[in-house]
Image (cartoon, rainbow, N blue to C red):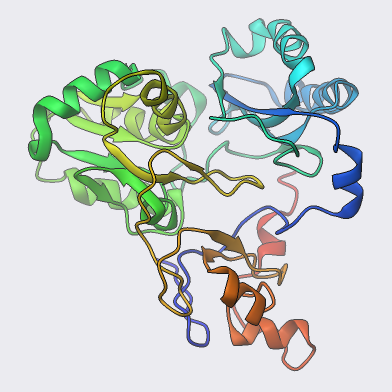
Length: 352
């Protein structure tokens, strides 16, 4: 498992993909608008040529609707399809959904998840449509066809009922990275103490090794895509009763908001955008990794070669100048050269 220890901080994980603050230009540009966070994914058999065509079409037409966000598309030779996270002007939501209706042959019927609240600023600074080899990073060679047998998708209501019935007897896997778990998770969930999903798949084999193939296995993630991959992986190995939360924590948050039930999820649902998360409950479950004060705010190291995501309070953020460690702070000031094997710049190089 990849973990770095820098200075006096043990970071939660190693990378992020977003700037730590919006530029003045972005603030002025979007000042008078409201935005709705919208996400969806579809595992779909796209050819390489179709992926390249889609990249150009999505970038051009969504930009014309004022959409910002991050969209990954990948061909069927790997984990193929689309994984889309957007900030959509509220008055353009219907237009954006109508736009994607035109791609049913590519993605099927799309099921959207939405943020808990609209935002006065977009949760991304611009639109990026990126081609990847896999929608999610995975060590094993997995094709889109390998994922045809999916886990059982439970609605948030059914998920809540079944977890409430099993209580502390439940075998429940949090398929997210450790820093996501730390700021918020379901009661009795097993923490995947990893920095990346690809490491989580390896750990998954160890966690289920002594389980009966008929054992109920529950799993969840932010929006569902990681469970679609991990759950299918287990189904292919013969585990029959793999159950995932349909729509992920995003959908569960809306269910709790609209019901009278007490949330089984405590804390914050981390999001990979400028919000850095949405509170499902008011529980603060973690601490600043510099001073140890109670805190659940995740920041992104401004050393662009590091891009570490970690918990940091406002006081330490100011003191450390938005960096995760003395080393990164000194790198930015030109006092040291970056010395770590991990380099975020290499991770975001074009797949093709």
